[in-house]
Image 1: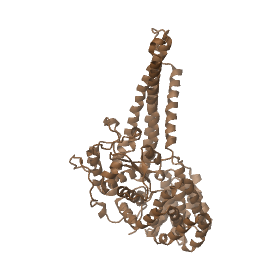
Image 2: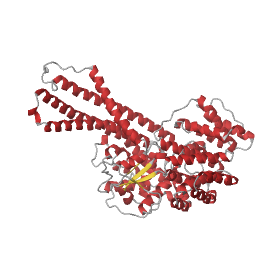
Image 3: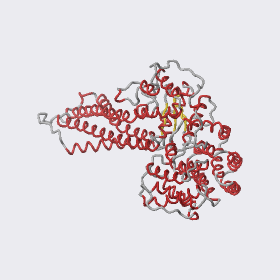
Length: 640
């Protein structure tokens, strides 16, 4: 299953969630309507009622009024919770009592975890997520957010301290699978839906307890007249009934969680094994969870509504299999190790890093066909992790330097933007920076330039993906101002370099996603896409080919890939007509398209790059730049 198929599967699960949510609301409304009719028709609310009168069960106005009230209550509560969650994964982690681990931490356990997450970020081609530590002794973890830009990875104290590096890497790989496959957005929406459904039970408890308390304070039934007493009894019964009806919401809530979550855990386990080529890593983590006294339990009050986020079952009580949010540990371990002897690891001990299968993996070889590149998007292979570990080691001193100065992250982003163009432009671009930032940032940027120019493209992108979230730590408005400066630098030299365009687009997209993480995407008709596509394919053609005939052939190859759905009329634009502004405007439109349309566009771009049948390092670099410009996560690409 490739990245695009996984995202489509997540959308199908969203439709299932909506269907079950509608069934829950309808069931609650019907049950509540039946209670109201019974109370009204049985005379509990009025002592003078004729109890011998036959009950009229179908009362359309009352039914639709009850249904509207339930919809309003559940919908309002769900929207309220979803609004709280709009800030992204950090809200979820903080609500669970998590504290963010700082990039410059010197704690050995925290440093080990941060190194693993950094390597996984480089291997997957996504910005470094924030990492949170949960104050829980159970062994568990989760990933949360609407997109990779606002994603967080949270692990419990028990997980960080009980697992060795291989096992922790397996858990992190499992969570990165959720980040890449669109599961996080679904999880957050599900959290909002569950909050609305469960609000009925909370409301019932409130009415019942409030009425019972009022009855006690008023001296019981002796001091009330019969009519008042009947009303109080009626309200208490309705409150009790609503509380019971609320458990219909609990039923559907657990059903939704189990229907959405269980199969995804098997897929994420399989992805983690595929990523690391080390089944014993994630299997060992699951065995330790089974043998630990607390297993994966989470004591936080929000554990019920966030149970579907976690790596393992976070609830203390075991659920009926139909309503379990996770498959049994035995099944998950057996799926990874068919010959498992059934024994959990009872004692939690630290062990040295074992020799991993992926350590002997050969370095990643370059893809040779378009479908190889398509399959690379949003995927993490064992070879990609090996490449990421090598890149991480190669830039280790740069990362240490990055952590030492508060201005370093800003300086690195500005320096990378400068090094994406010719060195002859360094002086004028530094003057632009000097006029726009304080002296410390200017000096830091100037000091970084020689090192940044010595790095390979993969190393530069890795450093970029790790520095971007660090720069955002000063505030998204500060990063937005920096994005404007980066755009000015890109325009200052009057030339179009696709790498500098990719970097400025990546920063702009990151800022937009952080500001509105829950934004929706909409497909566009071919009439609106023809000119932007021609601009993009033409720009790639002039970069990928030198000879006019080769350019024309490359452009036609890309146009044929896109004309299935998006491009009816294709025109290779003159080179002088392709301005920086035109390319930016095209990418502004294309980067916000749904993934199925992006996939076709990326296929067209690949056809242009690969039209000559060669896969040199220059082509790989161009593919990486194109994927970044379109907002697609691409792992490091290494030529043989």
